[in-house]
Length: 217
Image (cartoon, rainbow, N blue to C red; front, side, top):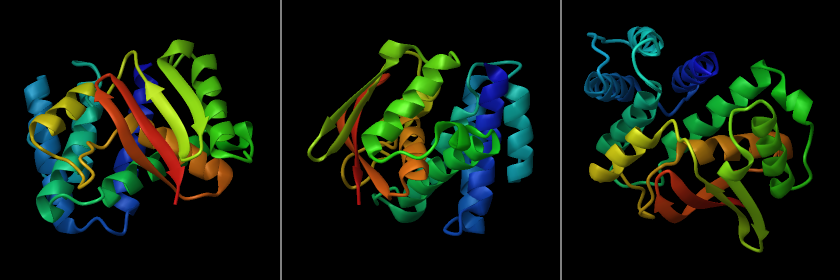
């Protein structure tokens, strides 16, 4: 499982590098806050660049569980400090694009095929994750509604410490929502399979049991 999570970490780092809205100042803050988060997890190391941060996180898998969640915290904290309470546009773009890139590099998009609806795309992705043992069937519930698709997640969340820390630090969008990395991954895959642009809205927040609405914009 850790090898798969290492690929996720690399995909997020790659997403940061490729995102045109990410400035050098934001990268500096991402590195700062992610490394501070890692230190609190017990992963020590002085880092000043994104490359050094990536190396530290990959080494961290030998010491702690889910060190890649430091990236989620670093991105959210950096965006919040630079821009205040926004729509979390940069965090969302990185989260969705990193998932698309990883899925494409592994051939998953070709395997999943096109989807006619967001609901169909999300169900396909869930079935894939269950089939490879990444999640359990009961960990994700998907329901279609007029306003979009409700997705509820539970079980083991690899980003829970980062999510709770962002909540404690008051890192919110102006909708009062803490960015959810798990559900951004679902939205990213659904965008790739449908060709639609999607957003998320928080319905219930109680990590690791959270519900968001994924809808077309």
